Image (cartoon, rainbow, N blue to C red; front, side, top):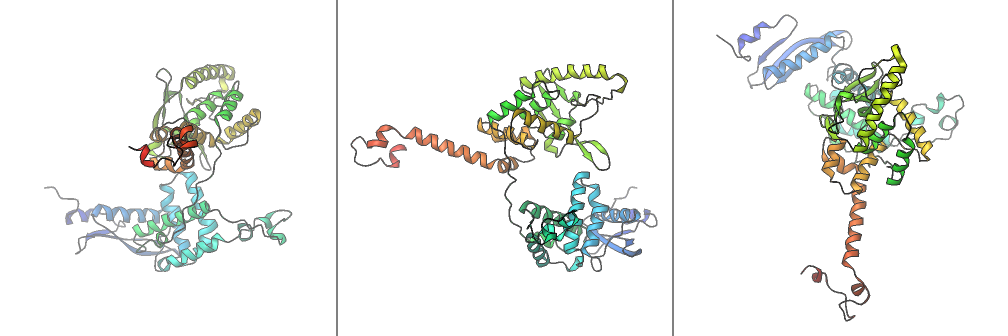
Length: 436
């Protein structure tokens, strides 16, 4: 005879220390167990779920964090700072990329804990968050963080001349989003009844400004790239809009040069713990197959021949793991070194200094100006939603709308209608005349 996973018989197979799971009278499932608490003590926690599996999963997560030495804060006694530390070390670390987790940690240590860390988690209110954000918005970071004081020769704030180094609206929004993420998990763990940070509006910041290359500048860059050992990379970046990590993560097995396609499956990044590391693409939508221009296919074939010559020259020192773009010893290229090579190429071409990521913006902008549909650009760039593409390039679309309207005005106007009107020089024709 088999038993359902939610039957009483299945509740008796849990080992000592695993806690208990049972169904309440209201139909929900409750799981309870002892975990490590601040002060090297232990306390009994209770979590709830609509199914036994859900409640058990919540309890297992808390017990696992406790076994790793991370105390689980109590909402009635724990502070916001204690919960943020627990969330970073026991929860976020398993769901975020290493570089993202590093940024979250810096945000928590630099802004959240100094500003809200001493407040009780259970008593944190939307007013507290709003007051803190308003204060943060007007606080000089050079003064509050002692940036100038750490210099050998203070030249602004520490010398009595405040530089008013304020946080940008984008940074404030990012800090607010980190707090919302942490409190959202506290709600899921039923440490607090609601996420008070969601009730605070920070406003919608303007998108980060970027300066894409014009068509003429792009041609100058491609001309300067001729003869460069990474010519194929720069051409691919400007023709396809691939991210820096996606370019460096490309392997020969991802390319089908006969069909003229490339499969984007991974990205190469440098992390503080693992060094140069190959990771999955940024989002599921970023994993895609793109068409390669004929020019890029030709450059990649030449690049492959060049790589074979470098391999022969390197001999036993060659260390190759299939990457398309490597150093002369066959090792993956560090993203920072690629940035240096790109800035050198800009100087050689006599072009203004831009970020490598602006090549991606240049691709999208030039495609929009050529009349390519937004959905095609979204698929090429690997954006998760077309709304992202539309928002980032809204200024380009607005300019194109203006050009289209001006072109329509030119088409509708004529010497006869602009100079004399209606053939008799009496009055200009009404709009109805154009829509009959």
